[in-house]
Length: 437
Ligand SMILES: Cc1cc2nc3c(=O)[nH]c(=O)nc-3n(C[C@H](O)[C@H](O)[C@H](O)COP(=O)(O)OP(=O)(O)OC[C@H]3O[C@@H](n4cnc5c(N)ncnc54)[C@H](O)[C@@H]3O)c2cc1C
Ligand code: SF4
Image 1 (tube, rainbow, N blue to C red):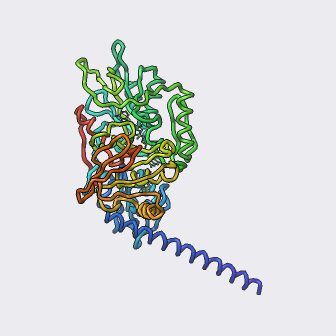
Image 2 (image 1 turned 30 degrees about the horizontal axis):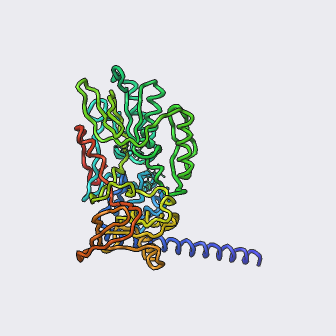
Image 3 (image 1 turned 60 degrees about the vertical axis):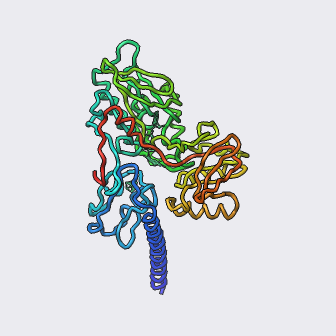
């Protein structure tokens, strides 16, 4: 009797677990379907780095890729096949490809319709221009670990080579203080070379722009002069603190607020790098610019004022201000949400030239509606900014009517221009990859 009760109990537990698992999978599949619908509306989206393409004929729908991907909800099994349902969430870990039991996943750059421009590099990360190196995400491979490793390898090549500065000039100039540029600079310092690190924004690069408390998968990180960081997973805040610790313990110097605008070849074969802080002569240039590019401008009168910014870093600085966010992508609407959540602003409005937020993720679209209903956000659809004044902005709507709004700050997030322009100007060859490895 007791045996039957025990068997019945286990059978009931197994059934309950099975039902729970099925329900969860159905939920995920449904979300995946909705994401696919959205993707169709959004058009062709190109992940910034290497990403998976799943062969639907080979795929057996095991779901191994879904569970292997550290960025949750990037892949989903829909109709028995793995699908990349959130291409913008993919940061190129490649774990999906290794996990697939039937090798149905290839890792590629760009898509068949929209190519991804990549610089041509040799195995030491040197371009065809002697002494000019490209490392990190700009070269095509994302991830902090790859960037740290490539920075060190390229610097090793400079150290082993014979391009050295004459007189007062530098042995190497590193542009970009993200993971790649930081690691390269440390290796060059370690070898006793004269090196300068220039950064237009913040020490740490893209990691400083992650959302608060984001869990970051890093793997082991081996920094020259600092040693191995064995913690494979940390929060954004821990990662930013790690960068500060590296700076403190190694004495690394970084010139922040210096935008590199031009690179030219000097007559003696050296390089002349012009930044907003001056012109530097160097034997080697190591470009670790990432792929986020420079923010695109509106090119309207008044945009040069200090009240116009291109990113919300600390929402608190907008306290009691009437803020206008310009743009209709995820970055723009997420900035508006950050202002609503933490800015204590007098008002938040968003101006977008189109009539809907079709290019946004569904949760963002839902939240826009909720914020508008709650009166916390004003959406000025089909409008374009005409002029920015000290205390107001003027906009023009699709019917040609002019609107004027009280305004203390403008946040412009209308995309970016790729850093490839700077590379082409110095004759670095660029190839466009259309869904190829
Ligand atoms: C939301 C998000 C989440 C991510 N999560 C992870 C994760 O969990 N794990 C992981 O491994 N990777 C993750 N990544 C990817 C990772 O952040 C990047 O691969 C990595 O930062 C690339 O390093 P990098 O040094 O090549 O470039 P970046 O970190 O982008 O640094 C480039 C630097 O160059 C500077 N710069 C650019 N142009 C100029 C110029 N003209 N003059 C001066 N300075 C310039 C920029 O301001 C920037 O600071 C994530 C990325 C994003 C966007
Ligand atoms: S490449 Fe990485 S981030 Fe992209 S889907 Fe595969 S495991 Fe996820």
